[in-house]
Image (cartoon, helix red, strand yellow):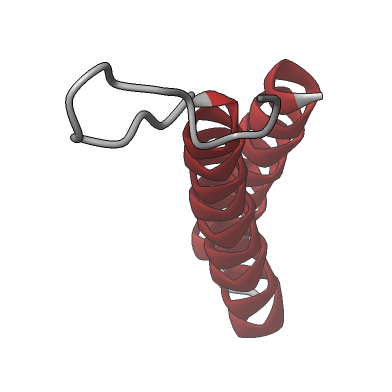
Length: 77
């Protein structure tokens, strides 16, 4: 689901930039603000997707102890 999250974030950023640009062209301050908020929302989603990806990578790591033999610490005998 990481790719979908990144695309959703990019869509929000692009839509926000368009709204901001149109708002500036038409001197509509509320649309400028709305566009900036949507861009911020996209940035937040992007950072959340990155954090989720890092957490998933970390959870897939297999940890071994550093005693002689290096037995797995994730279970088993």
